[in-house]
Length: 443
Ligand code: CTP
Image 1 (tube, rainbow, N blue to C red):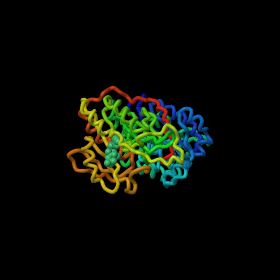
Image 2 (image 1 turned 180 degrees about the horizontal axis):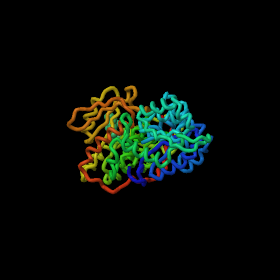
Image 3 (image 1 turned 90 degrees about the vertical axis):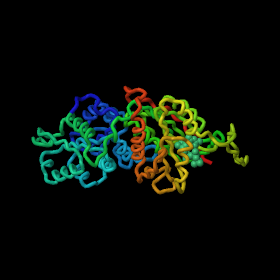
Image 4 (image 1 turned 135 degrees about the vertical axis):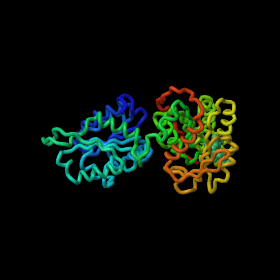
């Protein structure tokens, strides 16, 4: 085990505390996890919140505590599911006999069991309870069942207990729990995923990802838009950050949360996005055009709101093909940045290979947005990867995060022979640039 320091830098850990008197020790654990560089999201059961108030955890973690399994984020996604997907590891400390029984049975009645069920990240459980409860065969069976899930159990210590008895049941020392978390992330049990499938293989790489749909103004209120939410681009950004990349998101019209560790540049129209892409490409290792860019825009946007009785007929003109233009610019750069396009097709992917050739991309991710589970506003995608001179590779239905991870495996392989721009670079934490979403009245 390496010495304490920044052993969890760049990792997101869910810290779940359940209703034991030892819940106060979760505060110390939180401080130690953040001291190791982790971003910590605290989850409290209702009874844990009766022992230690959420305010303490919120102040120390800098994030709102989750304690209601029904809680939604402002973008209407389910908070604990999003947390579960983002987590590199989960630690439940203290874990009561009741919580372990619920978890062993897969009962998702509280926010921590629900998050554990929804996550494939390694889980560390540190029980704390009265010695008699710990010794009961029911508890032993539940602990054994949790171990069979691949969960790492940090055995409780022997000592004076809140009941006045002396015996095994005291929560392990927070330092030992942190060590268990570090070790679980470094060597995850089979069946759980690594915190990042390939470690920090994108450290020092600069990745520009466009996300969301562009919006072409008709007048100051209305625009021509599309159904893209930005989720695929956000997941690529998140996955790239997890692998150590410096990430800039060019945000069109997005309706999902963007990772706070990315630099976000607002690019509401195709023209804005083109300018941003061409400005950033020379310093980038990779451009991923996940945005749904409008192909047409009104030839003239009205400076004032069009009245209903104007009965306008919109004259449209084609927009710039940003990716094709970026390809031309990339030809003059050494090394040529890796260019990745997306192609949203309907009904068949027959046009995708020709599109990849026309735009001269290194990789094209094509999907049929009419297929169930693929396309706009859903958490999953079924894509086919197209690379020049290779047969199209259909990938199975998977979450957008998994598509992002797999795509980054391919991008990392293309980058591997090249030196990073800035080999010493650590992740640059830049605050989100405030986004000014255009008016959301579609036509
Ligand atoms: N794209 C772009 N600029 C545009 C349109 C699309 O850079 N004006 C990018 C998209 O971000 C995507 C890729 O090109 O990465 C393919 O987009 P798609 O809409 O599928 O292709 P189009 O060029 O628009 O072709 P078509 O409308 O004929 O399908």
